[in-house]
Amino acid sequence: MTPLLSAEAMRAADAFAIEDLGLPSRVLMESAGRAAADRIADAFGPLAEKTVAIFCGKGNNGGDGLVVARRLHARGAGHVRVMTTSGDRSDDTAANARLLEVLRDETDADRLSLAPFDDPDALDTPAPADVHVDALLGTGLTSELREPVASLVSWINQQPPPTAALDVPTGLQSDTGAVLGEAVRADLTVTMGARKTGLAMRAGPAHAGRVTVAEIGIPAFALHGPAAEGRDGCAFLTTDAAVRGWLPERTHEAHKYRVGLALVVGGAPGMAGAAVMSSSAAARAGAGYVVCACPAGAQETVNAHLPSVPTTPLPPRHEGGGELDARAALDALAGSLEKAGGLLVGPGLGQAEGTARFVRLLLEETDVPAVIDADGLNALAGQRDAWFEKHSRRRWVLTPHAGEFARLADEDDPDLSDRLRVAQAYAQRWQCALVLKGFPSVAAGPEGRAYVCGTGNPSLATAGTGDVLAGLTTGLLAQDVEPLRAAAGAFHLGGAAADRLAASRAGRTLLAPDLVGELPSLLHERFA
Image 1 (cartoon, rainbow, N blue to C red):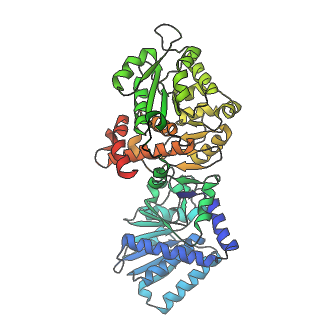
Image 2 (cartoon, helix red, strand yellow):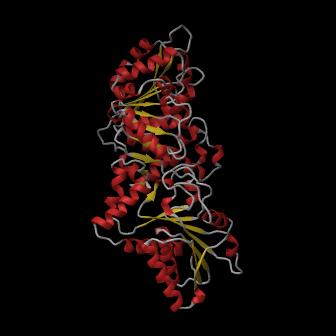
Image 3 (cartoon, rainbow, N blue to C red):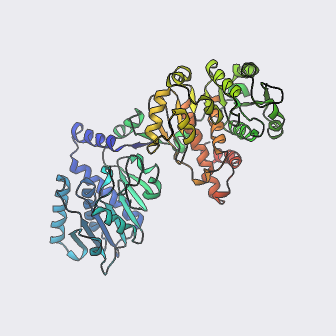
């Protein structure tokens, strides 16, 4: 598992290593700088004929940069040019600055220079740098950049690549991935100890480039603990290895009902495709038996597209209409509900009052673990927190996009700038697993543990991918995967399928059913 830590959690891990384990802070800084120098040299070397410009702030991030300068000089870089911002340095940073000054004075000054930063014009020299290293601020930024750092960031972004950032690109908020004014666009980010949450969120991936984690001596349990405990703003980034371990194996004694029955409820006339995609995805996720329950008027269409999936017609309130008769529809599901291991409610179901009443009645009366998506979510809009907590009983997965979440939370314009913390807060309020769809999608459970999707690309921004995600989640639920892992595993698989498709064709051409078709090969290659 790959932990994502908030700035506060990372500071706590640092403090634990220093105060409880007795690791001197200077040693942690030395380890961070040494590891970063190695990664930079590996990525952009050989450096023997190159000039490396390193921009160091006055805090510990700047201290890491000073160690990088010393280490790259020792590795034979052609010239290491260090530019520092003014102000009182932290103790460890000041000590490393003095050490670098001694090294400069006692060795060949033509290969090592150390000077204060005044203004961008002073940076335009006859010998431009070949590599730039951002060690200005790290994780401490909470407001927009101020001068002179703002101008320096703008100047760095105008230089030819490559650029490396230490810990977090300057200008990027380390918890949310928001850009505060302007942020360094790095080709490589060497982050210390553990990935910071903001590197995976919002603008983080675009500004961080390739992210690599430098091991600096803090024990793994201290870094995994905040994510495992569900601490605010901390999560796990999904990986193939983790998801592979969640997928159930079939024994020789397996049969279709023991493997898991998935019940998909959706697909009103005109929207039958949503139920078709969800049902197909549930089957491809490994459910042994999938039943699609749809309004009677859509049954023929669904049957035509799903020859391997039996259908159950849901009675309308009025002959020939799309609105469901709530009690009669629930009675029609009795046999399937008795055997189902996973239930999906909502894709293309419709929003008529009788249909919404059916959704609420179904969720109140069944104990089957359920995924609630699309029109299923619309049917729950306006319900109080107490209603969710009473009926969810930690067995629901809610999968809203931003608009659906606003209706569920009864907020006109909810602040989703920190989607991870929002998901954690509402999952605990509603006592369910909550997926906030986006790029990346995040999922949180009732105890606060959360996952951020580690796969996917912008090709997923097309109609129907949410129906596939809901079906994948339901297929995993039906196989007795617990709700939060089912949700995280589903969006990881869906994103991985999109990545596999984008590797061989134009991403903008992706259609949601393509993801379902990609799953057999993907599961064989990466998740067997």
